[in-house]
Length: 524
Image (cartoon, rainbow, N blue to C red):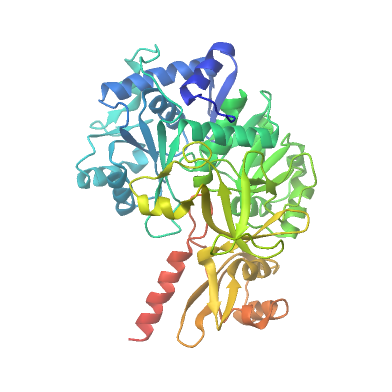
């Protein structure tokens, strides 16, 4: 009925191991000069050993395990091993505090925590709070004689395939939303979901077995899983997994490993543009770099001039699996937009009642699909949120956009990010876009804070270019010359950095909470 059929992650991996056993699947680059490579056949055997290790620890169908890991081979092994035996991974951001991790592990019902020595203290604190957690396993060098070692547990296992059966509808992952709201929601991801995500990206990029992904995004987020790893697997291509993003080494890695495709977001793109110019970096083989979130036209021009690595802006969510909107690879691109609907997705812009809005007007993005196949299966243990998000076969994204005369979709703002100022709706992104064009501004976030007279006042948080200084009045004057008066910030604050999630989304709820607390203190 679609690009998935009845396939599972297990079936695709084993097919690759049988038909292209010596083909490189993943090369791990720790960015310190050490690399390890795994062919499809070798990787499949290691997955089998890992699956049997999980079974020896009492993990079976429906059981959940936490992967509190930075990018590493063990993450991939555990992901695909869980898929082989019907278990479910719940990845977490390694920057999470014990309080944040406690909620995720308790809510998801995880029985094991897999982590690295650098995060062991947090994991042990969480284990002490969560009675369901039975053990912690350390991946890599443990540095702790009392910790259980992944390598030791796996080494004694057979590499024969486990005698288990899987279905396309089986859940494989619980990916919690990235934390722009106070309580993350666990997105249920099935075998079919993962495969559909991979097929969507593979078709949008015209991937072939000769392509090679450069993966610098964190594996605990959907981007690296959906867009990079899964599109690699369904195509029979290869990937270079970097232990972390390094602005000074990104293009060196791309060149050294002959990478052809990659995925980024705006914050690391700005970091790359802030690096010293090196003409040799344009000699890379990258033919497509996916990205999301706003960059300026000047930044796009500078990127192409310096790096000659073609960009394709897209839009997608953890809940949509693949990206429903992507700039076309073989047609006119407008990278100031999120692109056009991808084959397999139906996308509309609607008002609050669900009625389509006229072209050119702002509406919320809704995406049609089938839960558990082309859309998330739902939110784990949150029926109310699931029913509020997926209504009559349409997923309500919470993102506002408009469609131009050529059909390209342009991001406006999060539906919850509209500022109500004296009876006017102000899209924070429109103000941010203007501030970002100031030559001395590196980054910014615009928020609305409660105001007794005007409902909300507009506050801009600004990060200046390193070594530059800027006055609040200069930013306000810059906006006043370019925006309607009701959109001009009432206040400008300067920060060294903005709080962001692992994939670069500004955590505006933290900024708002900080401003409210500050106001309460002032008022006594």
